[in-house]
Length: 73
Image: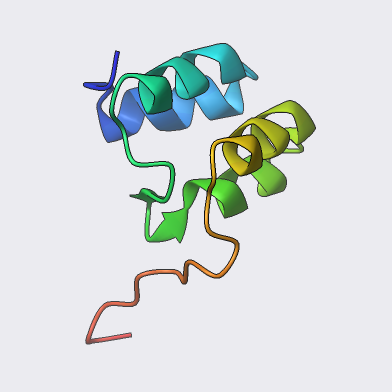
């Protein structure tokens, strides 16, 4: 399950399918991965995913992971 594409990961978060996201993390996806330049933890919070935020934190997500900024922004 760690092989979710970025689009599938975003879709799962948007659809509230937090179990899929946590299964991907448990399967090897970095708990500190970035999606669209923002850490999963921020994406989860933005989506109102309390369960996902708690799940990521319980798995050791780094609350200080910063968004990835491109050189031209």
